Length: 126
Figure 1 (cartoon, rainbow, N blue to C red):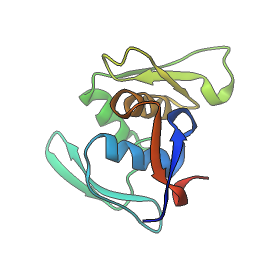
Figure 2 (cartoon, helix red, strand yellow; figure 1 turned 180 degrees about the vertical axis):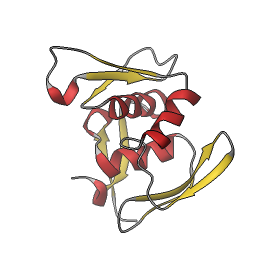
Figure 3 (cartoon, rainbow, N blue to C red; figure 1 turned 45 degrees about the horizontal axis):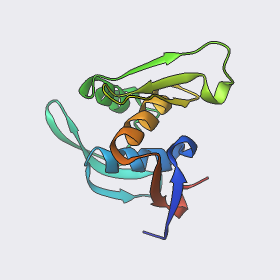
Figure 4 (cartoon, rainbow, N blue to C red; figure 1 turned 60 degrees about the vertical axis):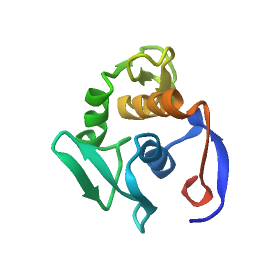
């Protein structure tokens, strides 16, 4: 892995967001592959290995996190497209915003578990 850089959670998107979700949820064997994040993450049936972990895009992964953390996400009409959804886990106290329900929830989960600023691999930032 390359150098880590400090990033505000509100600026995380794509592979950097997915990698940070894996870290925040204690996924194991987290690494960076040719196409994105690789890890073992928890499902109701047990651990699941994936060669493409994308909870911020894939409802089969991100939806499990919303259920597991009693989370929510909702569309807020009138806001700009890049922040028109708000979401987060139960008990977070504040919601985070994003362009989609999954991005908003993932940012909210990270903010709740790790704080509003995180360290991510520089190579994952757009």
